[in-house]
Image 1 (cartoon, rainbow, N blue to C red):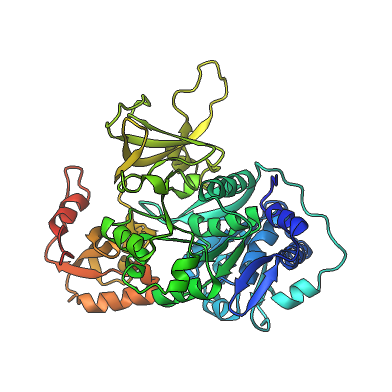
Image 2: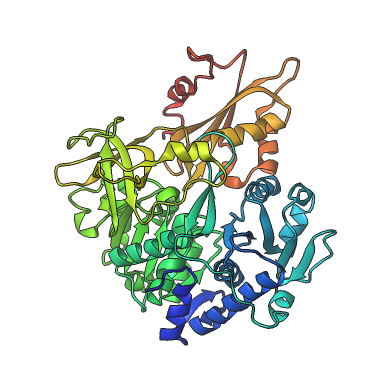
Length: 526
């Protein structure tokens, strides 16, 4: 079995070279062709001077070049950093600086948008542009994708790496401050692909639709799971939910994973017979699926298996609920995925009794390598696994999720709450501080607090409560307009409320978010 991420493709290419690996619009790539493109991409990076474990950022929509750029970095012995294509230039620049990116792969159009901020990224020395001719980049070495791959000369040996070496950094928002870079090893990703493929029973005949961003762990999992078994992946950058159903019908998709807000929309649409006939399974991730939505999907897709999943980027996937348990416990997040153990513990690490709420702790091969260049936050979340034999001198590190769950007598888990203030909207995790920093940067407000308020479609809607600066007349619509210019769509507040005076404080002198969130409960109820 493969030990390194890029070997997933190489192995499938050796077994079934002419099998279809990727489908994108009207083109497709076989495993043999994809393996060749990955090898040439790795060679291009090495020609540009990429050193062992240096970072390659990929800021593109989903397309074959995106996949080759990521797997090519792994094959070269580097580390890829997928950047959500919805992020704005300042957010992209933060990531490029934070993990010292050396090579950026992006489109001509995106590079023009980034031009004003790239001077803030001193470690960046080369850019590969996809879909157009390269333009001079000052001190940067800018080359087109076609020229980079066609110019690969004598095969350079890749840097030697092993399965515990890092291969990717996925950025996820924290409860405070800017995004955190979760460092993943080859072992994490290969073990994750193997585990998920096992319980989804994926096989070489599957046709998986890649609807989620590849910067999400669950989105990237669609690729690795398929490559692990030699299945094909259809890449889609959809505009409307009905585009997904059309793709399922057109490509005879057998597997589809999405987040609750998307499932809510899909459950309200008509599913043609061809789509109902081909879809073997659907899976939910990124938050709890409302029962009404689950019931509607099961009615529309009576022959389709439904898998409910829970996970966090720091440990990829943690639990899943088998379809056979849906009728008995539709509100459960299931049990641990294969090759992982999930326990529920008290604050002192002692195991909780059945039904007692506690913190979910995940141990196993999927536990990531921590947060990039952030020892403090890493120490908070990555700690010794509870209940290990006392004779073990070196502790095993587990992920302490920060999420409160409970376990029933049969070992099934139920989500209770999140301890932090993270906003979960449209399947995205949004840091309230990141939203607030943009609002403060407008210069229009005195104080600001971003809150996540329950919403029937979004999961949570972002509501911002602000006060005006002294002597400034604050208009909520003007502030929203500024947010739309500076934030990706999923981070734009659904509502801005202007208050007089100061925002409420708790006994510690901090803004009392809980009190304000309580006041807003029911705001979006019908």
